[in-house]
Figure 1 (tube, one colour):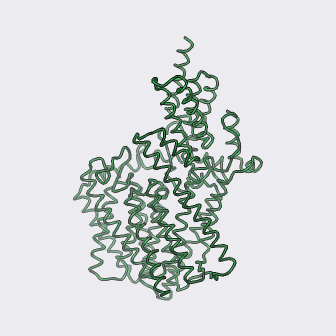
Figure 2 (cartoon, one colour):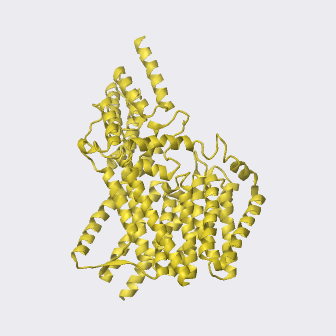
Figure 3 (cartoon, one colour):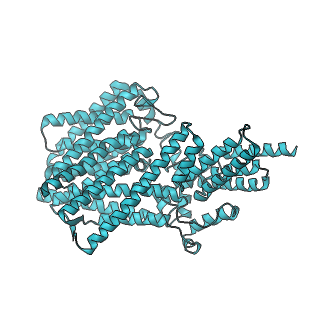
Length: 616
């Protein structure tokens, strides 16, 4: 009975992993709050199932690994970024201290130093922390519960088949494009491909999948199955090329070289099978030529262009981002805050808004500083060291031949994403990050299975440590579910406000529920401002609305003091009330934070016109 219950629980955990593999890319890459909420709750369900399994076994069994230390250290670092500190502590972190002093000294009435922390926008760091915790929990659940070759192969197959069907859909959608994803979801901007709003993010996803299918081809299995997988692989590589993602194609070529080298060193006996890859690539060229070769050639030909090439505008953005690193060297600006700090350093030739640095390594350095970068670097050094040691062990002892082939394939997937991350931000797309984490965990599991040695820590259920773990789980579970529910509920009211249903009331609910989200307060302030222009309202009501608008935008500034457009909107409200000196001071602050924002410049021009009219 006990074994049967454990088997059912194992099935639930594996089912959760398979659900995430299928659901996350199909839900538009899981970039929207509703999809992220589903994922976070599924991961929480998997964690709870693991806890129930522990209770039945009457002992806590943890996977002992130095990788876990790196993960926990990174989470502690992010927690450290969102803890409020007094001013004398912030002085040790000169960049953050100077930033707060600069903002508060300009308008001390608007921004006080009551809630200073290392992150320049605490809420953005908090949201990214939720995602990091979700990924960490998923990683720990997999390495502690997926422990057989059959389970690994099932997961490989589901990843590959999901990628294949998404590619079929993506190709059909491209040639029947009506401006909508799934032919029903209208896209305002972006370069969509498949279910992804950005073709580069589709490329990042499918580049994680392709090496796994190549690994299955190069492993030992029936020839008829290999032909089927070969067809699947041809379709997936073709869709990658047709997506015309230059970064995706380059990282795929790099990964192909890595896969070939790994097979040459660790699979010399079957290195002839590498001709399969050459045959597949040749077939892909013919297939793409048959479909439509011209757009692919045209796009790839722009790789080295000075304007429109792969390094423009990336290179100027990277150079400007180094200014953030210089000012916030040790602990960064806070995870997830790049979008609200880059504008301060943005050069005049960059007119677009950059939410990400298009280089995950540089963005990590700007947001978490040298300490965060070293923690992540140490994780991957240990990760690759352990995996390579397992491959050497398999080669030397001639054991787990097919599993070592799958391990090489999974490592190639990781390398592909790491290469692509030099020129894009795929790890900030939740679906891609999840699949990356799943493959990372599978590499760890396979490394241990090859050596047939799984280092574990066993804690009896009735020990003090077990009670402590249980207590922390209960507290952590409540905080996690509460946070996820709060973010989702507030976002639901925001979406209702966007479609025009009781806009003011819905925004008020969103700002109340998720009170640390500066964007909600800002949008509510703009809505109050718009309502105050309604001439059918009494003078008293309009003045009240203007006061509420100012109050909400001031709150937005307090929560996210580095966003220039918040200061500019407040300046406009103040100037509209007749206080031009204060408005000028506020506009100057806005320009310091976002000097090349054309919208701020337009507001200043309008304010000057309004001032001239009042004078005349």
